[in-house]
Image 1 (cartoon, rainbow, N blue to C red):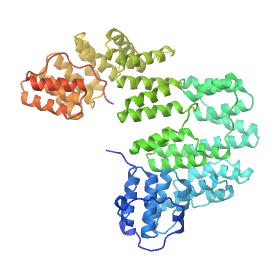
Image 2 (image 1 turned 180 degrees about the vertical axis):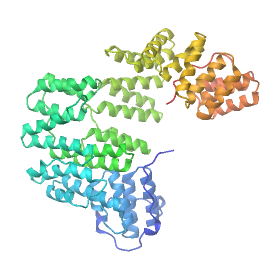
Image 3 (image 1 turned 90 degrees about the vertical axis):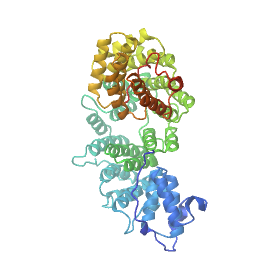
Image 4 (image 1 turned 135 degrees about the vertical axis):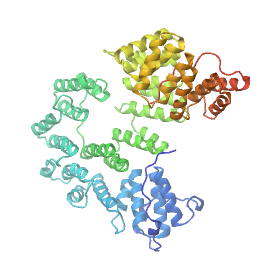
Length: 571
């Protein structure tokens, strides 16, 4: 079932029958939809718009709400809905026109509407209008922080130099205080007040683990000032805490090589960067719609803000709008820091849709763009598509480049080796990973099960799987492993008890149901065994399991042969 961006359905009685067509409708792109699509009435268009909005299709929803307004007349509720849809779709210009102010519009939507209008003023270079609106009381909770962060940038656009230097501060709001100082640093630099800019940059990059956003900003400032050695030292200090950070790695390489320093952000670019901070705050607070709205506002100011596009893509994916997510993930272009991450997300989108060839192509492009995380994702997709040797090879290249071993990489390569039939290498990696992480349930489960399946180190292995289940008692996959371990050891009664628990937790897993069928057979419960095997055939099993189950059902002789390969437990 698709997860949705939900908007509460307003009472349908609010649909007005007034015949007046609002002048704002002239700027809307009303769809030329057939009557079959929306019933040819204001009510039908409203329902079609609400359905599209619930499915995350903001642009389509906005057009249907506009059609409803044309067919049924002006309505505060329709305007409210059309405004919301336009914001979520990223059509901020349209949303600014539709910003609701009627008596029946919700107060929350009115406040967001004023913020949207202020951003649209900034995008159109009307700094004075934006500054006045941001300073008014019209933009209330929960948008005061965003308005405060934007105010200095609007002042700069309005030519109010002194107003642009006023640092936004809000008691108890760390986001506003931190990013307000970052914005002030940029604006001081823009005004060539370099000493004051550096004071701000130093303040936000102090401490043992400064954030990469602040480090990249200060490093760029140092590079622009010709202080490349200082910039390299700053990047090195940050990389000591974040060794896999691709943006920091690329910035350090640029500074050390003497390439051109990154340009200081323009006023719109700076304001867009600042807007991403409250967007992330809204998302962290589970306010997905407001988070998406803020991201759309940031992208109105700077359509090249790639990190915002990635966040939009993630929200669209969660909402079930696969096409919208892919459109967002395609925005970062080759050479951009975010390109590899975007290609990786696209790859998983296609993999989840069953288009493995496209997924592997996307993942390979991401891996070629550089960065260990992209290579690891490519290796994971290769494993998911049964290309185990290739997966192990890709992981080996990453492992060889690391100064210190990483248990996760060793575990992943061990799984790939095991699936490729290279048990000695698999056992070596799994044991090395377990030495680094002796209490990790995943490792205990996988290595323990592997030994049991091979008839090796049985007492030790059973204890390992028991520890895995004790650490993760709600994991159906791990309980299945423990039950199957008892099955392989000949304790069929205990196997049935555990595998029934596993099926309760993983009812739709063909492996677990197959195992339970085998255990039922061994204890003489043959009718129940056949029921479980028939159920397996309804759960989209892979070809191997399907063939095995069909053989058991047609032969009437029950299970035979070795157990299945150990499975990676689901999180």
